[in-house]
Length: 100
Length: 454
Ligand SMILES: Cc1cc2nc3c(=O)[nH]c(=O)nc-3n(C[C@H](O)[C@H](O)[C@H](O)COP(=O)(O)OP(=O)(O)OC[C@H]3O[C@@H](n4cnc5c(N)ncnc54)[C@H](O)[C@@H]3O)c2cc1C
Image 1 (cartoon, rainbow over the protein chains, first blue to last red):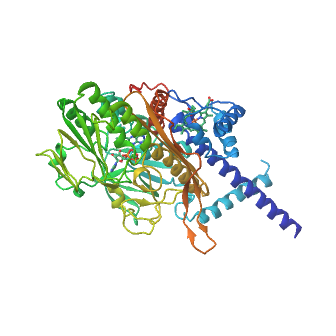
Image 2 (image 1 turned 180 degrees about the horizontal axis):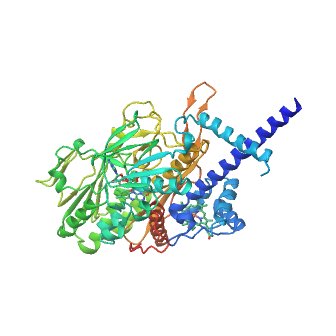
Image 3 (image 1 turned 135 degrees about the vertical axis):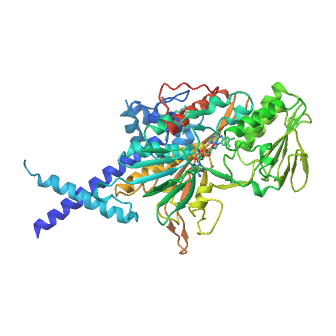
């Protein structure tokens, strides 16, 4: 009895972890890819729009918040920043920080 | 070798989870492939949507066997094609090879799709080849409906350009504008919304006017708009027309006529007929009404939300799969959405579809609440540009208090909108946008030598 319950929990727990880990991963990857049409593939820009690849995580999140709150001047970024949540800023920041 | 029971449990739980998630998605048949067979994805069309999707499918799940079918040898960009009409750039500047897409896909087929059997899951080409698929991606852009404009037959199409698909059409229209004498009249049209690139026609009026201002200052542009008003970035376009081209004065270079849908063309008399008028021009440029690409018709997916035949293809926003025909995904301008029909949208929704396909072939759920964005820059031809930008977020179907069901939707988020004013800075950003969206769509290397002038 006890053993079955433990096994069930183990199953449920592991399944949850696997599903969540994979879901988050693909989501961050897609959200970050979504910025590529302006910031370049992998956040490596080919023009006047700044690159995002390799930006330090804290700096990245800070910029997104400042764009959103209108504290940093922007032509277009306030409109984009307002469409995402703080958690999404973090997820994208981690993604771009990891790009060499 | 020690058998790690916990590892084993983890793995089998993962597999069991994957299988049950697969059924949840309702993607039976194209879930995890049995026996290690590689899932086959056939992509029709390598424009902004198709080329992006092909690249990202291979990037995110190399085991998918990707076949791309595209008749053109090169990619010619509609974005910036209006600057070619103005002589600011030339055709080579907006034309790119497919080398870096060809390199990553499993099969590149230079051919035109002529038949699709969604029951048997096969695609036929003009060259006589047949391709089987697990999932089909239709990214054919738009079909122009010449028959909706009286007299716009094959003969008329030799001299009346639409230039709404960039390529030889763009080059010919440029030549016609160059050959036009000073004091001539350029008549251009705007189709009724929804159409490819809402700001495009008004941008065209700007860039051609910038050319006339320099080279043929006595010339005029008559804009025949099928809509009741300027369909995109109205305030910014009117401001640019006033600032640069005398709009609102008797000397205005641009004569804008709303509610003037072209109904007929007569290339011998160089005339465009609307309900009210016959308008004569020295160069006439008529964009006929449009609908989802021919290939969508072949697949029987030109179906609205209600499943009835319509101009565009209703899709599930999480996967871009047809709402009505299984395993057929539609990308870009062919889709029925509330997004503007733009290269930006075709590029980033292609990645959304690629991401969803990757999740599904691995038996996982696609993102339950995807976010996509659009930004359309427009050039004035005078060294400045401006934009409109919107973020869209998925909202699942909702049962309201009164029992009615709100269907799933992509909701425009707060904060979207247009530039405060045109600026040189934004033209530099528009130039960067173009280079980055081309690089992302076509996999251009970091050291690619762009020649376009922004
Ligand atoms: C003048 C103009 C200016 C524009 N400016 C901008 C801009 O500044 N910014 C922006 O974001 N968007 C702009 N656009 C819009 C943008 O070009 C389109 O939204 C975009 O091209 C849509 O991508 P797509 O993949 O749906 O179609 P397309 O890019 O048209 O690709 C369709 C592909 O499918 C292929 N195909 C068609 N039929 C078949 C078949 N039967 N078999 C095989 N292959 C087939 C075609 O050869 C083509 O390569 C502009 C458009 C125009 C006309």
